[in-house]
Image (cartoon, rainbow, N blue to C red; front, side, top):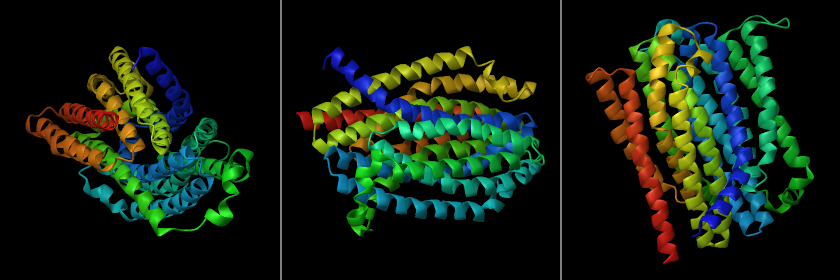
Amino acid sequence: MSALMLKQEAIKTLKLSTPIILGELTQMSLGIINSAMVGSLHYKQLAASALVNSVLNIPYVLGIGMSMCISQTVATANGRGDKGKVAHYFYNGIVLMIITALAISLVLELIQPILFHLGQDKDVALLAGPYLRLMGFSVIPMLLFFALKQFTDGLELTKTAMVLSIASMPLNVLFDYTFIFGHFGFPRMELEGAGIGTLVTRTLVLIILTLIIFFHKRFKPFMQERKTQWYLSQNTFRELLHIGIPSGLQGILEVAAFAISGIMAGMFGAVELASHQIALQTAAFTFMVSMGLAQGASIRIGNAFGRKDWFQIGEIGKSTFITGLVYGCVCAILFVALRNYLPLFFNKEPEVVHMTSLLFIFAAIFQISDATQAIGVGLLRGLKDVKAPTAYMAVAYWALGIPIGWLLGFRFHWGVYGLWTGFVIGLSLVSILLNRRFNKLIRNRLN
């Protein structure tokens, strides 16, 4: 494979991925803006937000992972030129995601009392309760938006959701400013205000994207198939779940590991939890680029897989891995260089700033592994290979990463730094396993 061919494939993947990346970064920016506004009130408000995020992230990521079954099945059907099948997957996928969103929201409502049994500061737990309820409600419009987004992405029409995501940022900032601090006649609601702002914003963008898909001419060829293709099928549900459940579990295995570490960080104290949240949220922001790149590669591979073009699949995979590797190295350098300045955006408490600056060094180390493991997951998902990666992630995070982090943090008294050492080990191992598997699958097909 020539360097020119790799470059061409990388450019094609970046072109498709850029709108996805911008959309993901926008969504993550909203979370960071929320944290910055809440953190300006008091570090305990920020710690409460971090606690809710730790609890929320597990079902949240399950839902997003489930939605990815829509883009993969739609991309494969679109690669074959089967518009009727695209419409069929869309309808069944949306119904599946409505059920998923309602179930997750109900679970979050029922588990609110758990906040008082996680060894957290009592003030933090009290602040977290109402915020968790509001964020639980907002999961419904958020997951349905993601379901519609996966449909447009699977058709390689990635700009649609990107524009809406970018437009949602000033809206969310306005609502947060209004409800958190109490402006334009509304009372000051602080952390609860952030939850209300998020709920309102997510509902509005869902309504707009729904109208676009149903009435815009770009989607008309697929919507015209609804009279014959919009019916529920047990076989289709089974196919969607075959991709969605392992994809959701993959997300859970990684995010739950970070969520559990957040709870453990809170056991060291509110300063440690706030510092952990700042460093982790910043690292998650840079990770969105890798995730968007992986999704773009996954969609391209899904289309090529529909045509059984294994040579192009190999080209897409190798070029995307190199792109992700370079990106991870750049992020690592920036994290080290800016480690003393980034914390100030969130909080100016000297203890929090100092601890966060040290955690950024750990975050820099795993930027490379985090980027390349995301690419590995996306490449394999494009081939509908989801079971083995799920097993790899279970071993890397839960048999090594979390136990080592706990051992170093509590037994060897490294504190929160021990937890982050576990991150580095788990991410590095899963990155190696995932990308080695993809390369092996391609070699077997081409030989």
